[in-house]
Image 1 (cartoon, one colour):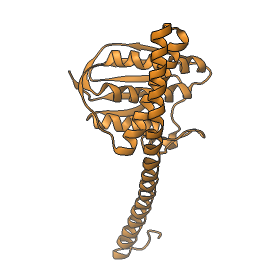
Image 2 (tube, helix red, strand yellow; image 1 turned 30 degrees about the vertical axis):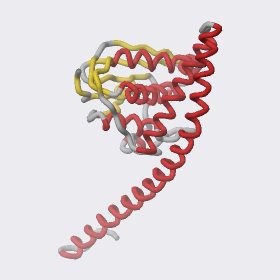
Image 3 (tube, helix red, strand yellow; image 1 turned 90 degrees about the horizontal axis):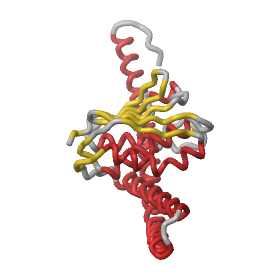
Image 4 (tube, rainbow, N blue to C red; image 1 turned 180 degrees about the vertical axis):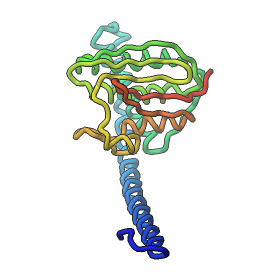
Length: 239
């Protein structure tokens, strides 16, 4: 309804327009909640179905490594199984709700471990990974790896064909920086919402899960663009 007239008429028109905006937002939120509930049920089923054979494969590979020695191929398989296991944990967290078990955590060790898991994917994309700084916080190391995997994957995909991802640790958090073109302006406002993505093959869940992990730790995850693209995690409790 156009906001026209004067006195009580224009006040009523404004109220109706605000009501229209609110109803539209509630409808969007309701549709999103329905999608999240359906995906939650689906991902929980998939995660449970994948976990058992994944555990069997891990045990088999570990046994082969003990019997015949751990070569480059065996190391690659074990690393990739570990990365898949983190993804399965992430799916379960998405379906059941994000929970964390904070304890004294060496952020540099978590970052180095995540770089190890992501290095081959980065090399395939022609992207270099590097880390600097130190920090000790109270956090869930497994969840921190999941958060970092999502941020690093996002940065690698944004620069496929060459680039760099730099992780700077300090204070009560860290910064993941890349030289990609950044987030499309129309997406920035809802960047951390589920299903928000600028890629045709993207799910729009990676940044949402990273944001959820930060929130579960009582911390904040924000995006900034100033020549480089940065995701800043801040507000973790120091150890």
